[in-house]
Length: 81
Length: 211
Image 1: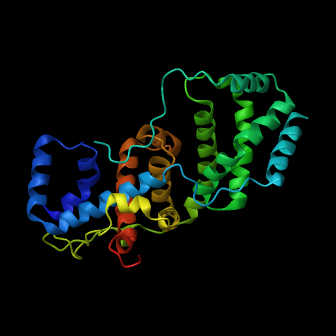
Image 2: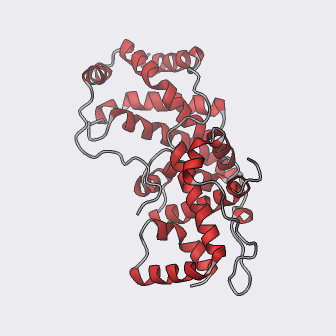
Image 3: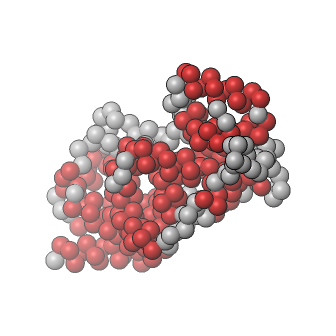
């Protein structure tokens, strides 16, 4: 296995989707390639960061303005009419 | 091992809480006051879902409006196999994606600039940098949330959407493929590239350049 393949298979590797044989090749490459270890660690931090913010609003949540609610209620009343 | 498994929607029976069940019954009865209660109860989280996907206030408003009207029309189809909020979440996601499709057709940016490059003999052309922040330290960084969303927003639309649906909104691969009307293989490929691109965009921060 080479660095390009390691980069391509990273999600599958971390998700446990590689066959045993491919995983062994993957691990063997990592054991001798600091560049791929650095790449893997950065990739793992990315997944951790995503997990940390999943479900948390992008910015501080402010209540939806009343005008938006009124617009939805108005649209519904027009549909019902 | 699924490193970043979003919360799996529970497939077991999800009998709604009593007041929620009453609300659903009143919605089924077509009560106008119930519709207002429904909108007020769920508009905040749903608006932020739509805005996260669409990145545009007016588009998010329109998507949310369409989603609430659609949910009201389809309320008879809700069968308590999922949580009511999960059911509504999917409707908001789909209404937002519909709006996004128009934008995607206009956008032709590629993700290539954010993917790793390799020499002819398949070694990294640019040496990847090892992060100095541990996973625990990441959790302590106040700026993480805003920075991450800022970087996600730099991704080309089709990759940004898959990453948002899978890693932020918590849809699984199958649900994401259905929402985007594509295959699970395409979802997996795009998700991997999106994560790789995000890694590239976050590398300077992970490596301490911007701490």
